[in-house]
Each structure stands twice: as C-alpha cells, then as structure tokens.
Image 1: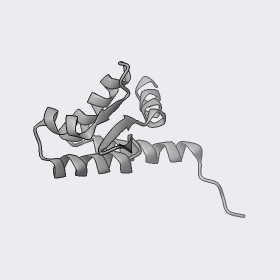
Image 2: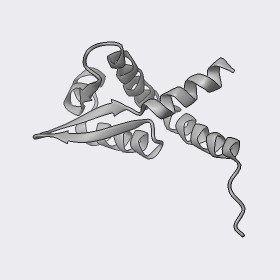
Image 3: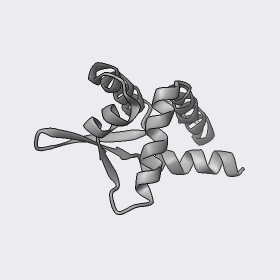
Image 4: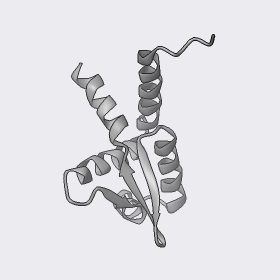
Length: 101
C-alpha cells in the first residue's frame, strides 16, 4: 500500500514554491496588484495593464506570469484577444494562514 503524503508537508511544498516565485521584485509587484484588485469589483487584471504599470517588456511580463502560474499563485484565462490574470484564492488563503500563525 502506497503511503499518503502528510498534509502539512504538501502545504510546506506549496508555500516554498510560492515564496520562491515571490522572491522576484517584479513578480511580487504583480501579485500585490492582483491582491489590490481582489478588493475592487475587478478581480482580474489584463496582462497588458501589468506591462504598462511595471514598465517592462511583454516577454518579461509573460515569463513572470508563467512563474506565478507554476507556483499556483495566479490563474490566467483568455478573454477574446486579451489574457487576464486572477488571484488563486486557495494559495492566497494558505499564505494568509501561514502569516497569521
């Protein structure tokens, strides 16, 4: 019988991935923007808006978004010709639990 992973170990792995992704200042700025958007009626951000705000090139923003997606920090979905980022609320809640503990 295959042993099941310890739930807390799974959370530690998820947190480690998140912290690694957020260790880059541009990714942290993007994530903070998405957190602020959660508090408004707009819960998603167009990737083009992130390019304008951070004043970095589209390929760099795309790379950072990919890192945030791989760390389960954000979700990306196509909306017509635009790509929209949305906060992954589960990972956000896990980060909140970690910092409130």
